[in-house]
Structures are given as structure tokens and as C-alpha cells.
Length: 338
Image (cartoon, rainbow, N blue to C red):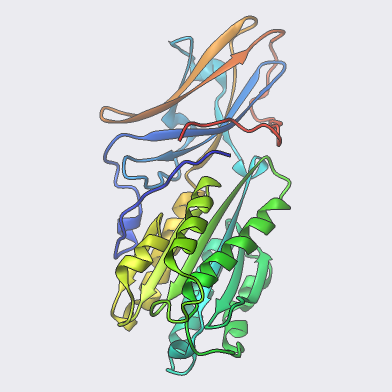
């Protein structure tokens, strides 16, 4: 898949991570399905001008046009279907377990923050939690699972982690975490796959096993695969420039150790909003022959956006059910311009 670069300025509260309703909207088309008798379905995301996700829109917030003519909602029977049939979302949480965390008493605050994050994000997508210290490798705490499974034991397993190297191999952990995330996504059978990497640290890269150019290359490749990149940096030794470079989608940075729970909650809100900003819109086309240009539009005034798709209505007929789950081509997703 080509890249849809997501950019978002770091924030300090959960409220700042949610859409404020300002600026132009961007609808990014990822895949489409056309099925007889006359069903057309499009899978897309909605973001604002700052790249912030626009979640929880209902079917009545979208207007459907064919060949520039508005299609009646009574005729189209437009509806939002469960987007999970078209895409899967995976989040990898990398947790800094270097000596400054495990030997300072910070685990007492970290464990409930990680558990809360896992519970919230795990209810929407598959979540894995890995730890890192100064070692070359990252360490599995919980493999990819969902909210009904192992994420409930995140805090307990985190507390039992035994470090091997008290240093911090932040850059190396980012690269290894992206590899684990990529491998998990490769095995997903849905037409579209979206990954998120969330990194928590209380400091900076001290191990120097991996230098900045190498991690930059890995991050750029991740963006090219539609991977969202988040950072939680809480501690007096954080390097804001280093962390913002890693958290290219969103970051929460604070030198106040007491902000840890707030930081995890804020990024969880952002990941939730991101997941809920994907839509599977289905409708019954009134066309019965020929090729047509579809436009889906949402918003109004300056806060408006749309997507377009060309489809063939040859052989279309009545008795369409817009609630039928569409079939997407797993091998041929929509090619999008960067």
C-alpha cells in the first residue's frame, strides 16, 4: 500500500487528541467493493486538516453522489457496516523497562497505566506488549491478543519482568518492535491491515547500539506501510526532539513523573479515535447500466471533504441489500496518491 502520512502535533491532554471540528476534512479511500444486484461499498478514513482522526460519524453524516447528482437516502439505503470485515488493526506497545524504571519504584505507577491502556485499546483491536532495556532484543510481555484475552494480565506480567541490562536501547527497540508488528500483520487475512507502534520511555537512547539514521529509515518505511507512530515520554531525562521524531503521528511529552497515567490515557484516546475514524459505507446504487463516478462527501462549509470512485453498473438490478457484507479484493487494494 502507498503511504498516507499522518501528522499531528503533540498534545498534553486527552481532549487535545480528539477532533475539534476545524479545518478541511480528508477522506482517504483504501478499498471498494461492487456486488450485484446493485451494492457499492467503500472503506475509507476521515481526518482533519491537521491529520487528526475524525471518529464516530454516522451514516447520515455522509452524502452520496453519482455523476454529480445527489442520491436519495431512501433510494440508497446507505449504512455504516462493521469495518472489521475489511480491515484489522494491531497495536504494539513498547515499554521502557530499563534500570531507571525497574529500580526506582516507578513500576507501581507504570503497571496500572499500562493495564488501562491495554484494556481500552484491546477492546478495539489486537494488542501486544513488549519490554526493552539496554539489551539488543525486546522481550514479549503479552503477544498479540484482544481485550477478551491476555491483555487483562498485562500489569501482572509487566511486574514480573527481569531486566538484563539497565541501559536504554530505545532506537534498537523501535526497529525490533516494527519488525514484530510487520510480521503479525503479514499473517492477517483481511483485505487491509493497519499497525500502530506506541513507545513509552522515561529517558533517551543510552545504549547507542543503533544510530539515528538507521531508526529514521525504519520509521520512514513504517509510514509507507500506513503504520501510525506514537510516543509517550515522561521523565526528567527525556529528549523531546528525539521522541517527537519517533512519535510522528502523536506524542505526549512531560518532565513530570506524575503525568504518567495521564500520558497513557491521552495516547489511548488518540489510538481509539484513530481506529474509529475508519468507515465502511455501503449503499444501493440506483444505476442499472453504464459506468459512473461516485463521490462520498461529509462536513459542510470549510470543514468539508470527499472521496471519488469509478465503478461499472453493468447488470445492476433491484432488490439490493445494503447491509450485506461486501467482498473486498485482498490482493488489489485501492492505490492512493501520497
